[in-house]
Image (cartoon, rainbow, N blue to C red; front, side, top):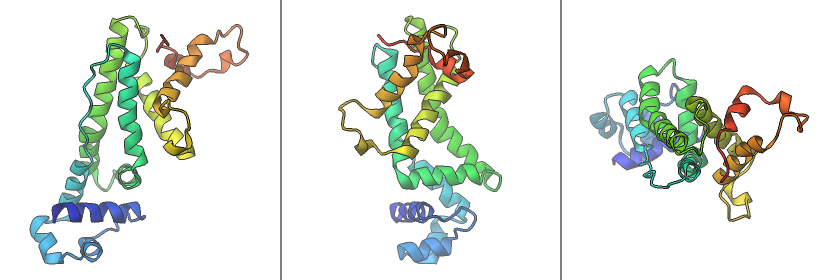
Length: 207
């Protein structure tokens, strides 16, 4: 019953429902499970939403690659998989949008979904600094935000199946970001217009 109910919530949220508007009655109607059975398992929809967030957690891959670039590509693949799951992406967006009404759920989402991936990416960046693959003065938080933001932005424009190349989209993103390092501001008329975030993103070198 647990998985059926959780899937039912994700289906409803993915279909446009909000956390505020969604009720356990709606979940019962969607899943065909009696309201009493649901209430015996979850005393409130907040408890149910908490279990939905737990169902969205994914084990992160071990960072075993020697190259920081390879480790970042692996982690960005996880990030891309998350945003391509329409129901889970919609659930995440709804949690953020309604953070004021569901502060505990928002904190749980940040702690269990966002923080572990960000921590792993920062470790990969830090390791890259130690071996000289990434500039030591690069802001880890900023570079992490740039990489993750690009994943979300790209998903809004296209889908993974659009790419015919064997190269994964996360590899293309990193190549795009690191290309800034090859552009000299004296030779590139757009160099002076690069934002601070793009300047920081030049820290990952292409080997």
